[in-house]
Image (cartoon, rainbow, N blue to C red; front, side):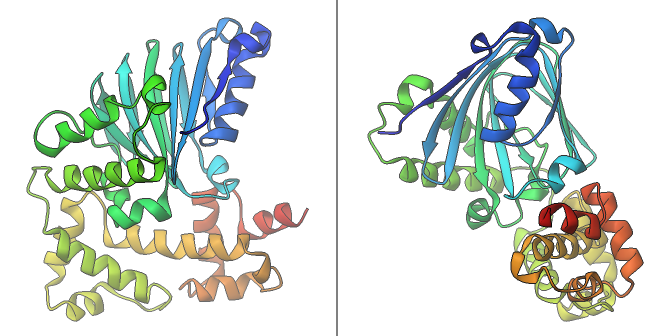
Amino acid sequence: MPTPLHWSTDEVAPRFALAWWADVIGDQMIELDIDAAVPGSFRARIDQYELGPATAHFVTAQPQRLRRTRGRISRSRHEVSVLLHLREGRVRLSQRGREALVLPGTCVLMDGSEPYDIDCSTPTTALALKLPQSWLRRWVPHSELHTARVLACGGWNSALCASLASLTVDSCGKLALPGDVVAEQLGATFALALGSEPGGRPPESLLDQIIGTLRERFQEPDLTVDSVAAQHGISRRLLFLTFSRAGTSFIEQLMQLRLDHAHRMLLDLHSRDLPIGEVSARSGFADPSHFARRFRQRYGSGPAQLRRSLLL
């Protein structure tokens, strides 16, 4: 049976409540900038249960705005996504150029490796399921393509929302199965829900194959659209259309893979003596200055600055 943990702003003085809340969310879930209309009267509570690889956070909070910034991302050591199931209130989510209105009974995925903005204009009650991206990719290889897409009623979406709704503070303490088994069931249902989405998206198998090729070849500095299209026996137009229908682009995915690889190398203490130029080259960048500029845009600080902060 999982052991619960609890935090509440009732434990601190009102004038410290918002800052304390931001620290708790950063330590237990994901690092965010958090604002409230009246910080001195902000109130919130979180109950946490471990479900194997997943962590269930039951959150009740007064109106707040939460932002996942490049700076917060650069200081994060673990890549996580958050599957939010709203129980009460209204939430507006912005990520990757998409806008989503989340209403009670629906759920939405947030990618912790990319910036996002959440506006909770009313008091909210929700389940925030923290999922390690390395685990999530087993079920949804390219989960980043599904961020900020509301899953409501219909087909497997209904099954997913019903499964999440069945998780409560009380039910988590009385689970008939181990937490890791429950997490695997949720992962499978989530994959089925995403696979049942309508909308004329390209065949997932083609998209998977192309992104798989990018994962294998992103370190090639001269990698081009033409060479990838030729490898898959398709036209440039079909390749661009495949990414476009999935809400992304060839360049966006390639740049993300290269920057993620460079970020991991800079965080790896075994690579601390490797020159920044070599990190750039091994990540597929032909120009170190272009690499530094792109890295700063994504993570809020340059590669050399990130390395110095880690060494300190």
